[in-house]
Amino acid sequence: MYPGRNFPPRRQNRRENVNESIRAREVRAVFPDGTTEVMPTSAALRKAQELGLDLVLVAPTAVPPVAKAVDFGHYQYEQKKKQHDAKKKQHVVQVKELKFRPNTDDHDYDFKKNHAIRFLQEGNRVKAIVQFRGREIAHADLGKKLLMRFAADLTAFGSVEAQPRLEGRNAHILISPVKAAVKPAEKSPAPAPPPA
Image (cartoon, rainbow, N blue to C red; front, side):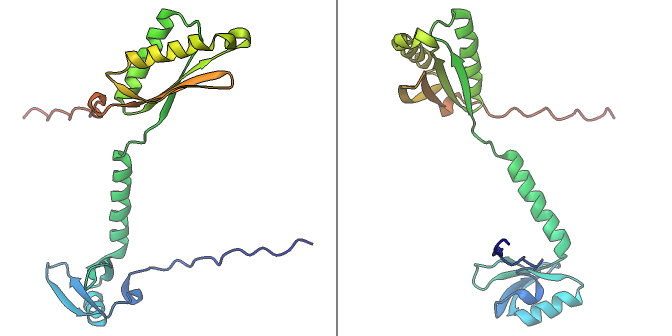
């Protein structure tokens, strides 16, 4: 027999800060016609219900709290829409990894360097890793020289966060973008209006 589990009680779908659940004694009520007035919560609730609307607390920290008479379903929809738009606009910084070998050819090096430049211009960080296999670890200094050359080539686009470090069979360096090198996100051009 297994012992009983202590799960937290399920939350009921409570509407906090709406209608009767508003705990403030008085509120600054804002009505659809643009009028605002400080009144007891019960009077503001009665007036909102007469208009067929809900009383929603929009600024609970204000003195007195601000409550608006709106359709609660429409209000929730607008709030979700604002959050979605804000999420779309934010940029999450990622760490892009580029892997090298100690004897990487010049063409491959240039190819990866161009990728790193693009990543830094997009506002992402770049982690360059030199992998050593077998007896290549005896020449760890070649890997560190390669990483220092890589960092020197990217000084216009990024700054080195820490000097090259050897961890196990890998040496790595981390480069963050310089604000001057980050290109703003390109927006698609607006469609041309139809000819009149």
